[in-house]
Image 1 (cartoon, rainbow, N blue to C red):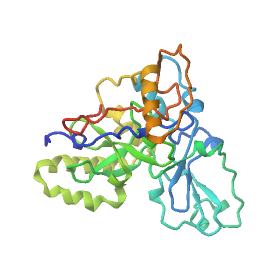
Image 2: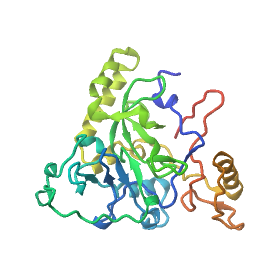
Image 3: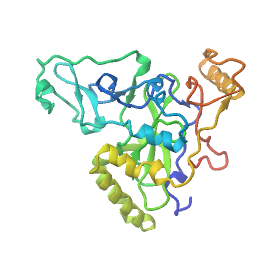
Image 4: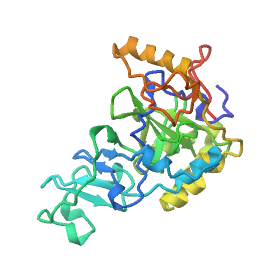
Length: 319
């Protein structure tokens, strides 16, 4: 492992059982009060939902991939639903980004909105279309985390949209719990990112001392000092300003290409792999005339995006 490179050198993307969510699932992009569908359960895990057709269909035509991501980034808003541990009513907290900002036990009396800070206040209706529209997610785009790639210490990072999938999480098969999150690392060197499982992520606000303990290692002490400084700066910014300043698409100066199109032959391959693994026949959702299709145009339960692990090193370098 080259010490000059960021932790991404040893990080790897999900293996083939990690799939991009179905076309009905998107990161929590809220446009108005009715479309807000980030919910938090009694253990403070977010339910995040939005229709890919409802959001991406609003994209102006002719945008480059970088412009698409910039457009999507501006749709990000803070806010989630949380359930009272006493009355079980759901309350919307417009100023909370992810579940880790809340205590283990949350009650209506903690709500800063005085109109609903008591259990007797009626519950606001929650617009949910179906179970397929929900995912359990501990983090959102813009969440600050400590991330640990194999062979590296805990490092300041931010959950961010992947330029290939236009989402920040991976779903495995039919599960509604993300198996990996895409994070971009804070650093003085060239920006890099990685897909990491939840076990390798911790809320940044709770792990500052843990990160600082790695400053004893001289080989990357200066870089880590810069990374900590950047993360602390991001912590004091609004979500919009944070993403605008520290997201991958802002810091990466190279060309961000559109995801490769997937032809019918490749799609058939993944369908067969899915059938062998789960003994389930996936429906045919394309015609023989579809010689090529974009990953954002078809249902994606069986489509694998991202780089496969290299056989010689077991790792893949991301964009």
